[in-house]
Length: 72
Image 1 (cartoon, rainbow, N blue to C red):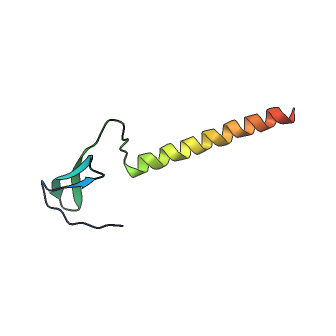
Image 2 (cartoon, rainbow, N blue to C red):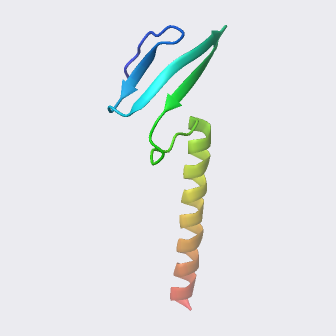
Image 3 (cartoon, one colour):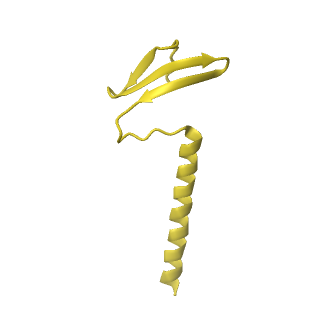
């Protein structure tokens, strides 16, 4: 993991086309802005984790259905 120090209104660039800017710092909360191409999905980690879990459950469910059909 790369750890960087940034102040309000400072930014960092990822892969030449994603910019992360520090917008505000209040206590232990930091507000960031992300500028990225439309085709680059940006999620909060907890949302991303939920999506991955839902996708895995859907694959498991459809896989079980297919297995049941094969066994008939």
